[in-house]
Length: 478
Image 1 (spheres, rainbow, N blue to C red):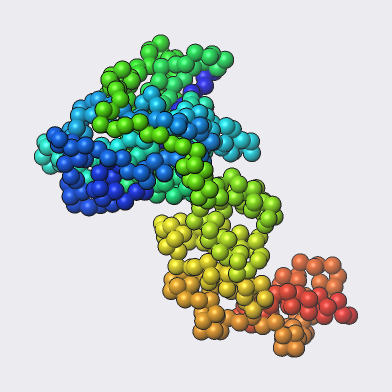
Image 2: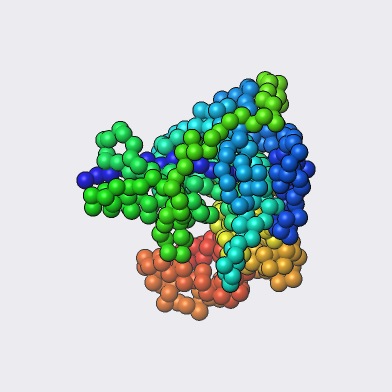
């Protein structure tokens, strides 16, 4: 029996404001427990929330970037539930009137096609605190620093069918929050986190199956693995004649399995009602147009421009625009050296390879775009060979020095003077008469042998183009 999965995501993105959503406490990560708190975010009696305007600005950025309709008059609601890390006993969120609805983003699939994923809504809300469990004692402690940190929740339609589509959607959304500078996208610190709603049904069926909600997935890979496991688990239950239970499950990355956390709450369980302490938020056209005018060039339009302006392939453009910082780095190089394909190849292979091996972001790269452009300028002008450039790049990565000083210090300048290379090439041909005869009799692969001998004799400094031209000319002489 053939099955298909039906998947929707709820993504929480922590906004990059300096203060919390309803008070002036800092949002910075990593402070000592309970040092970024005040009577407002601790929910003490007699306090009143005051909305942070920047939270609205950031939410509008993402609403525009995801093609949403913006609700001109929206309002906050109280979502009532009790957890130890939620001091008020309710969360201030949005329910019936969120800031944005009915959006869409387009994802690229592995077969080269695209697919549109609908967005149900984007709403603003405050985060809860964090429980810290003591591994040695049967106690838990609570840190309220995160309480009141502003979030937007981006809820998709159940339009995804495979874990690969889920990964593509999540990566696209991640790129958008980074491009719009609304969220730092750090999944390990929890500032960009995802819950997945997963169900399965027989192919051709229109009725939705019983869904489960997956939590605790802090990387693109874990989201893909968690969703795949849950699809397989639900299919196995159905085929054994058992029922899928609607519940919230956690994904254990070490074991690659999901397990029950709690029964899944529905909207009526939260007893939503309008927050009486916060008046409706009115957003006019002027505000929307100003935010729209301040948005940077977004990934899709930037990718299209890279293809059109720089004549790069679809693949190269996709890689280079996958993150705003990478695209900025590439264009900073292009400003110094207008050789798009050469620069693209080096950024995608050498620079991104360095970032991966060192586990750093491109903003912390020891090789600046200015120095990479200088290095490639030396290659473009035949001052050094491509092989030498890799050696210089490795030294740049270790020291942060500019390429010219490294080339001078290591004596890596390429020999491109024909008059200097001619005697060496003549001598090598004369010393290998049998190879010369074989070459002239049709064994042209021996060209590689002669080039290798020249490169060996010059310790790799000879210009390969000049060497090839000299060899072809001299080997053709009887």
